[in-house]
Length: 126
Figure 1: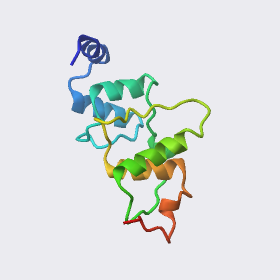
Figure 2 (figure 1 turned 45 degrees about the vertical axis):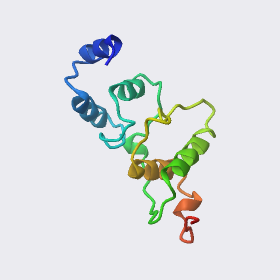
Figure 3 (figure 1 turned 120 degrees about the vertical axis):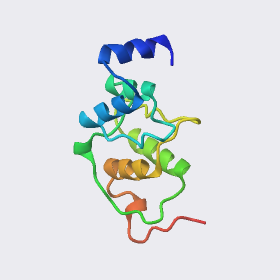
Figure 4 (figure 1 turned 120 degrees about the horizontal axis):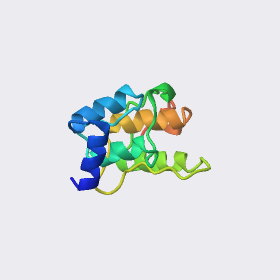
């Protein structure tokens, strides 16, 4: 971890990644699973500082998706939904940092409750 992140952790009085994760949740952020490659100290500090988008618990919408598409397609759909907003929204997701599937499904449902993946007749292509 670089010195900038260490100084930010000290400023926030954060003891560990797990402690920061808990703080983020307590402050209303709907975080991906702590074990996903996306969740790093940098990612959480970027959310806190407003540089990375993450949904809040109060915004969440749940929809069933018994057979979701693959992770890459879910990520593309989330980025497509976020592009509808006026300001550009960075998710922190890149080729090395991915959230878990449950977070992706809930996040997509939050952004668009009527998305085709949540329709009764949706079946992913094989």
